[in-house]
Every structure is written in C-alpha cells, then in structure tokens.
Length: 373
Image 1 (cartoon, rainbow, N blue to C red):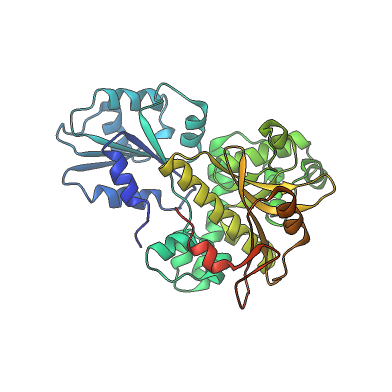
Image 2: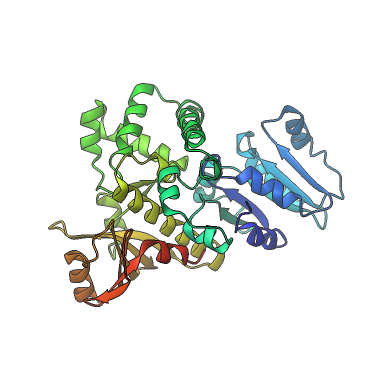
C-alpha cells in the first residue's frame, strides 16, 4: 500500500533537507525506500548496518548521487554536525532525506544550527482519511481492534496482528526505552505502561498512578515523557487562552497504536478519533504552515468536551465522541451556547446524520474519512 505523504515528500526534497519522523514500525523505512525508487541514482544507507555506517562516516557515495537517504542516523555521535556538513557542501542536484524517531524529533524541538535548512514530515499510522484518499475501504472496526500501523492492519488474520503487537510491545519496552534513557526500575516503567492502557481518555493523575506503582509522581511523569518522546503516547491538554495555564492542568492521554488500548469499543473509538485529529493537525502544521493545536475543554466543575481544534489561540471546532448516543451532550450544548464555537458530536453507531440544538450529529466514519491531511 502506498502512503499519502509520498507526493509531499518528493516536492520538499527539491527545496530543502527533509526529516521524516514517526513511531517505530509505522513505515518510515518502507516509505524512504519507495521514494528512493523514484530516482535513477539513489543511495540508501542505514546507520545500523556496519558497511553503511562506514560509508556514512567517510561520506563515500558517488558525486552523481541524486538522492541520499540516511536512516537511523540519530544513533551516530555528533550526527547533527555531520548532516549539516553534508548538506552545506553537497554537490548540485543532491537531495537528502533523514529518517528517525525519538531523538530526531527531540532535536527538532530543541533547535539547532540546522534551523531553516529542513522541512519536517511526521508519518503517522493509517487513518480513515488516508485510507479514503488512497481509494481503500475504511474499516473502523479493523482500525480500532488492530490499530493503523501497516503490518497489523494489513495482516490477513487476527492472530498475525496479535503476534505483531506482542513483539512490538516487547521491542518498545526492552529496546527503545532502554536505548533512549537509562531506567533503574524496569518493573515500574512496565507497570506504568500497562496502567496507561486502561486510562485512555481520562484526566491523567500522576499522583494516582504513583500510588498504584509505588514510585514518586515525578518518576511517573518522567516515564510518560519518555513514552511521548518514543511516539508511544500523546497528551492533550485543556484549552486556555493562557497556554502556560493550560499545561498545568490535567492532560488526557492517548496511544498512537489504538490496538494497545485496554477498553471497550467506546474508548477505542475515542482513541481513534484523537489520533485521526492529531494527524489532521500535523498535516495543517507541516504542509500548510498553520498553527493549529488539539486540546480539550473542561470547566472547574468538571463539565467537559472531548476535543477542541484551536487555531493559534482561537477555538474553531468542538468535538464530542459517543459510541451510540445521538442526543447532543449537555456539556457540548452549553459550551456552544456560551462561546458560540461550532460543535460536532461524532457517533460510532448512528442511523442518520442531522442537526440538533445547533449541534451537528455526524457518523464517525464520514467525518473522519474526510479530514484534510
């Protein structure tokens, strides 16, 4: 299966250095090799391969190379300076694509002398919108059960998807996390990971998790930050005009792999919506240069709306997620009447779309399939 971002990547390679980031096994290497196939003289080098590593260190590719793909380069000491040197002294016509996950994204956030030299592309799991735009059937049940990572989603039988996930979790915990940061209490971080799977979509209490695991709240927060850096989970904070105040309030947490969610159909659907909206936001950021963010709304007395798409500091759309309830939620109606923010209630199982109390009641599959990426 092709990936929708391929065309945008090819365009940006003619303009700047391109960083391709995203979760483990989401398809970055496959996409990079597919892009390399569009060129007559590409060179694909993976830093994990000893022979490739030597070529990278010595910059021993031919001068007529059209595309240079450097995979897993963030594992190389001083890799940023190495990339900068290659890019600044490259011959005319050489395009560069650098792929990676956690450390590559962390570098982007910290800023460096590469600023202004690159475009960032975030490859996310398959979503209803991407499948729809690729002309594929959109199966929400399959996405909720298996997640949108290509291998389990495309597996012929459920057992193969289950086997992939077991190996995926083991690889995340034993390899990626320990490679990313030294962890002294391996059992504790495993327990935090398992607890998070059953707390998707609920306001996150570091104190509550710390009491269940037997470590400090700061340790729990550190572990969750590691999970975020490795594209395992993402947090959504309450919206406030003052973004600093928003960060101090309890976030909600979701998984990049919906198949990891330990919950009923309604919880899995909420996670799928969260991930689809995040992918939509990333597309608006990366390809349209728009400062959109994804938040949720919550008052001091506990009234809450699941999601709010914010442009800069201005809320543009509120979204409430339900499994089968077609009557608009009281919180959604109250927020809409008070702040006049357009509102939608997404329903997984809905017979007929309609408008009720100025709220759009939409089928989840229709709305998610038509998001802009």
